[in-house]
Length: 211
Image (cartoon, rainbow, N blue to C red; front, side, top):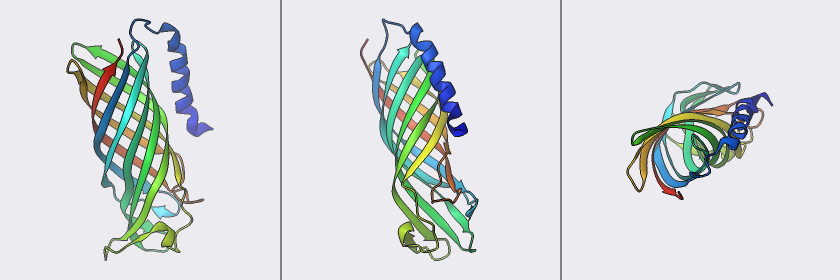
C-alpha cells in the first residue's frame, strides 16, 4: 500500500477542492500528444543498463473541477526498456518494450496572461504489447517469450507519473509542452524486482470544450 501513498494524497487534495469549484467555468479539453521517452530498467535479476530513447503518442482529456484543479485521463502508446542490460547469467542485451498506458492524473493549474503552467501526479496502468531482447554484440533479436533464460513476463504495469507542463492559449486551441517522470511499481518479469523508469517529453495540442 505504501506504493500508492502519493496517489492517495493527491486524491485527497482533489476531494478537498471540489467544493470550491467555479460553477461558471468547468471546461473539458480534448487533445493529442506526441514525443519521446527516455527509459531504463533495473532490479535484482538485471543489473542497471543504459538509458535508451523511444517514442510516445496518444490522446487525452481533461475536466476542470475547480478554477485551478483538473483531472485528466490519457491513452498512450509508449516505448520503454533499456540498452546494455546485464543479465544474471552474464549476457548483455537490449530490452525493447512497448505498452499502451492509461494514466489518470490530478493537476494544479496556474494561469498568467495567455500562458498557463501545471503540476500533476497520478496513477497509470500499462498493458504490454511487445517485449523483445536484442543482443548488443550481434544485433539479433528474440521475443521475450522465446528466451528460456527469462522468467515469465508480466503483461500489466502500474506506475506513478509525476510532471509539469506549460501551454499557450491560441484562441480556439492550446499548444504546449509536457515533461514527466514515470516511476514503475510493477515487476516487468515475474518475481524479478525489475521495474521500468522513464522520462517522457511531449508536445500537446488541445481544444477546449464548454464555457
